[in-house]
Amino acid sequence: MKQINSFSHKKILVLGLAKSGVTAAALLHKLGAFVTVNDKKPFSENPEAQGLLEQGIKVICGDHPVELLDEGFELIVKNPGIPYNNPMVTGAFEKGIPVITEVELAYQVSEAPFIAITGTNGKTTTTTLVYEMLREDNKQPLIAGNIGTVASGVAEEATKDNTIVIELSSFQLMGIETFNPKIAIITNLYEAHLDYHGTREEYIKAKANITKNQTELEYLIVNADQKETFEIAGHSKAAIIPFSTKIEMTEGAYISDGWICFNHEKIMPIENIALPGVHNLENILSAMAAAKLSGVDNSAIQEVLRTFTGVRHRLQYVTEIDGRKFYNDSKATNSLATIKALAAFEAPIILLAGGLDRGNEFDELIPYLKNVKAMITFGQTAPKIERVGAEAGIKIIERVDNVDKAVPAAYQYSESGDIILLSPACASWDQYKTFEVRGDIFISSVHKLK
Image (cartoon, rainbow, N blue to C red):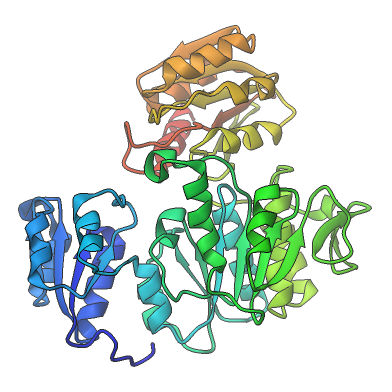
């Protein structure tokens, strides 16, 4: 960690806890800041806040009192989940108080360079692939960000010999000032999180922040198959590295004669890649490009692609019972992710879907439901998903209370050779704290069938 003085003796408010807020508060305290933590959860129910108080950090819990902003704070470190229309945030802007997320804090203290990955879908798989490729070649990578490891905590331990591979959400990227990755990847861009951003344009603008501080000395890896990602590239100062699953290019990462290639070099036959699904070729090509730019040997890339079968909750193979194969794709929190999961299989599918209602419909699923022989729904969006299922001609549609009950219901309608797929097309927050919790319940229910 860099020994910096830029936070010393500054009054800083950490707004919202969870893992990132706790880590940021403790780090700022070590750096000599006068830290106040404000979290909505009551203190008696807040072990994280209690732990920070024991470290000598001021803690205010139970609500977000706007009058707290009158205490002369010079900086706010905001939990990414708190929207920018929150009165505390709008009040801070009115007072001219800068608002960042802890990713910016991580960048400012890190001795290690960053490889940063964002996009609508494929972020976690791509992040994990890049990390594994660097690790296989002994490049000493560390993994951080939206993938579950708090960036500022990783940066605190990192040295100049490490590289931090970080997954970033649009929420996190809205709160950066100087963050500048050595390599940035934009996997793809589709409509998402409009309940947070308001418009598609604002969502894309947030994603574009990943390259806003890059110079010609850095790299931006972008999806050449999408107009919007290339529009972002047109405004970047970084060296642009395209990838495509459709176009055979003269540079970048692409497919030719059944091989994945980089800058005219054949790296590996597609048939030798273990990760299932055509959609994963996007993730593989972008990860390979980042690895090649980082000096990773082809043998390390090949070894990872031969053995890597997926990330937990991302089209994760669970088990086979009586000829039925079970897949956990709980991370599919929008229609596009579910479309890609459906396209990964040729066998008949029993689809488990539903979750938080964000106001959108699911008609885009209809053309991709041809292989779905039965649909089990749950959560707030069950009626909407049932409607598109009926329009797609699915004869068996059953609504259940939750994922735990969906698994035996799905098994009831299945037969040997079928795929039983949890791919909800929705966020989990109507019933479950996280998509990970939802996926773990699915896995547990599957094992109960045995």
